[in-house]
Amino acid sequence: MVTHLHQHDPSCPGCATPDVAFATHDHAHCTTDVLGRADALATKRGVRLTPVRRRVLEILLERHQAMGAYEVLERLSSDGYGNQPPVAYRALEFLVENGLVHRIQRLNAYVACMHPGEAHAPAFLICSTCNAVAEAPADAARKGLDGAAKALGFKVERVTIEALGLCPACQAGPAA
Amino acid sequence: MVTHLHQHDPSCPGCATPDVAFATHDHAHCTTDVLGRADALATKRGVRLTPVRRRVLEILLERHQAMGAYEVLERLSSDGYGNQPPVAYRALEFLVENGLVHRIQRLNAYVACMHPGEAHAPAFLICSTCNAVAEAPADAARKGLDGAAKALGFKVERVTIEALGLCPACQAGPAA
DNA sequence: TGTCTGTATGTTATACCATTACAAGTCAAG
DNA sequence: CTTGACTTGTAATGGTATAACATACAGACA
Image 1 (cartoon, rainbow over the protein chains, first blue to last red):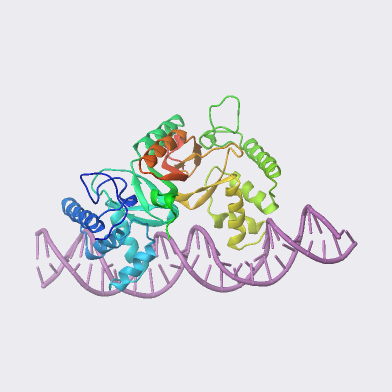
Image 2 (image 1 turned 135 degrees about the vertical axis):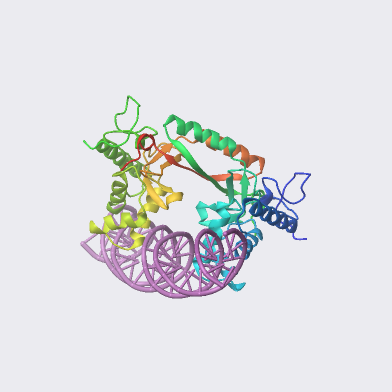
């Protein structure tokens, strides 16, 4: 069993909790669960999770880290898919639009969403040592921002909240 | 007098208030004030606000909008400075490090800080119509994020909070 | 004053990130 | 079996950022 970083929620030994990335967990379960939910979502919405798209999601699911589009592309082309940037960018765009992947602005990179289907607009916690990315609930932060924006008469449409710092493991002892 | 976007604070007809970008104001005052404070800051810290660096700050101060590095570079080179990317990037890096310029992740672009010297870690409000960028107090939002991060054992070092939306003027009637 | 040293700038080349435009294939509805 | 919408392949290009190295300049100090 591949153990990765995961959390304390007793009901889920693998996934579906806010901080999957930062605690040891059954990563295989984690992956198949998300993939299954992605299939279900696509069917429900009448969009097609085609082989390329599904493969990109799988690739991103291998690690709780953000990957650049070209890194994804390399993997794709070694799997026999096209090797031009649009192949990767189109799949990523589809996945982002459908809430299956998040884009990390700070890194110009992409990470699989751990809670597809659940309406959410998370904040991202990016470990500057091991590069793990976790999703954190951002309701409180958003609320604070909304207040400030309202005071200035600004109408918020989309928000990006990203924190750079150290994950629990790397605080203890920086990863190799 | 160049009037731009500015705000309601009665004590300052030009600058030094959180939402300078979104209200009509005496922009010349705004510029010279920040530039003066930048000089003072550099002296105080023993760093050099050299001609290139100062010029980059001036260029960014011309508008309350984010500018790309290459746009800055063009202006620089037409002023007789070097015309290779590192010239612009180095100056921008210096200004960012010294809190005189902020980088807007979402736009891969840079904007002059309106409150240099004041310790602050603002959120940015980016108008998707007119591209104006305002700094908003982010204390509340940060507090919310800190809570979420703490719950996951994540140690926050730097935070990016950026909102895309509509500034007051563009809500009324989209700019030309 | 002259030399040394650290910092800043100039310049070349290249890496990395992303999109436009168009051609060709796939699939399901009619 | 053809149409039309969508998806993928491919070439070319545009936009953002940095590495590496050479040169110039400013201040410390003999």
